[in-house]
Length: 122
Image (cartoon, rainbow, N blue to C red; front, side):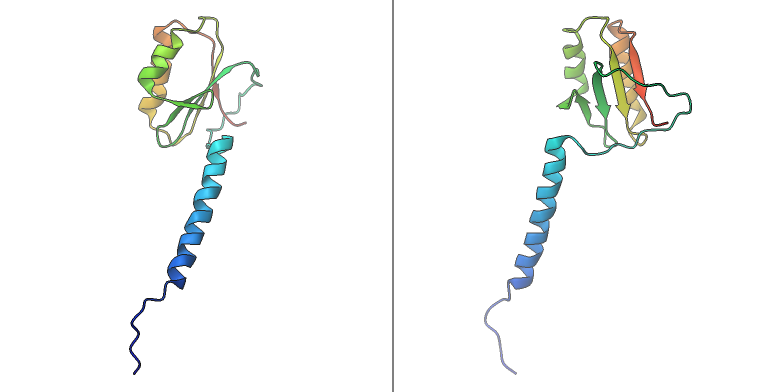
């Protein structure tokens, strides 16, 4: 038998190229803000207004304020700068931890925001 002194790197390069393609595709979705969230369904839904401030909670617990990632603590600080008449729309993935949803509602309630829509699918 013939002994090989080198390692065949072609399969390794193929795997790296596939991983690179996956990373590039995922980063494109993140940059455009089009990663879908799975909204709960509701039979009594209504059309929402377009000038609402959008708050999004993803299934992994990440919180976004108008497409910008934010922590729950910074979210509360950011609310101090808004008027109590501001309209909010909460997009919460149905698999998101309930504690994050309650934390967002509590932060809005403590600062006396009353114009809150919870977005669902009809």
